[in-house]
Image 1 (cartoon, rainbow, N blue to C red):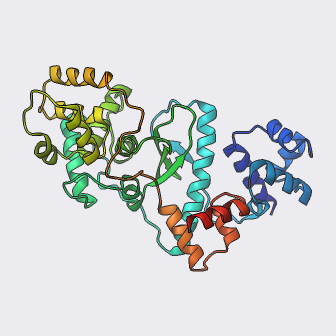
Image 2 (cartoon, one colour):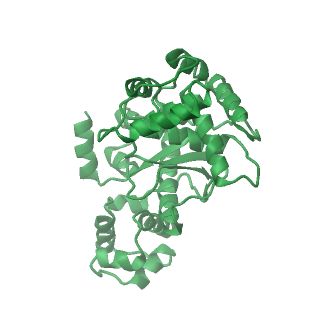
Length: 349
């Protein structure tokens, strides 16, 4: 019991981004920092009064601290360096670890575990042509067809990539990570517009699927991965059919329409047209200049909804409706206190 409590408390504190001193302050000094340290090392157990204070401070049900750990994620590594900073990285790794543990627990409960299989094991990408070819092959491997994929985040989940959406107040867009050396995951900002989510998700997926030269620069890596993402979202043949083979100009109305159809940012629609030699660089720059003068406050709309990860909630609500888990357990898996979850669940229905 001490081992379970110690890990649960440590993870919850880290996910909240709190130091032990800050946690002590939040519980109004019910115990000292030395006691928190002993709890986290598994050397001592708190009494019920302290457990309740910790749960309230961390916005969790007391039962959370005693839930058996059925799946342990001991290692989370971002695939490539991030711009998050060491402290934020540590917080996000704890969030990802906890989410993946709960996600795998639900999969095991339903016997619906999806093992990730990389169709491009050790595939080296060195240039734009490689990225374009790889995108065409992935559409076949994942049975996407030749049209823009819908429900990108769910598509990735259905192929064994776990999606963790978080609210972010910093520069976070999306980062690829590997858990326990073989479980791929994406950490993505839930507040991004749908068009941007789709793009950054596939940029990061490229970093999971492919290998690159060891001495590749960050700029070149981003260029190759973004071209792959654009080629997935905007298949060349469909793109030619939509905009034509050669154009002297592109109207803003056309770009907006294409953005809705392909589910990609307007700026990337224009850049894809340039890459496919539909327009010249001169025309591209003119389009960018025109975009700079268009005032937009609303997010770009698409035909693909809000783009959100949904498999975890689908598994959870299915388990709840089939009486595989109690409502208390469901709240625990959602990492919400019971009353908050009940209100959310009732509103959902």
